[in-house]
Image (cartoon, rainbow, N blue to C red; front, top):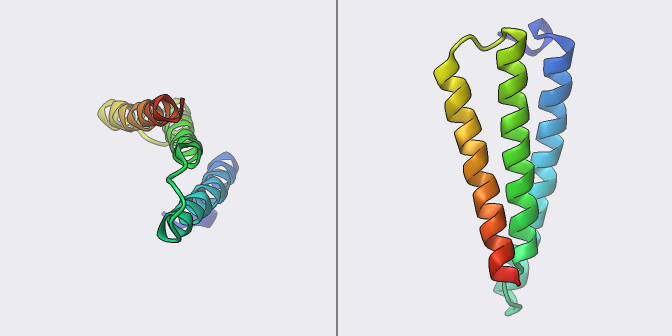
Length: 98
């Protein structure tokens, strides 16, 4: 299915998730560059990346299922579980940070 054939809410949510993904990737690259220059790893960047990925995955998968765009319940549970794993790693990185 092409992008122009998708519903407007799906295009908007996909675009917002892609922008959030780029921001999270920027945080990851900043952290990687700082680590290469000898600065310690900052877990706050990992927290931000994991929260963006987790909330984005959960919200898009639930919106797809509710609207009928994705009809499989197993795909919904798999996507939500993956988002929960990202949120778990976000809380784990903040535990390391404290």
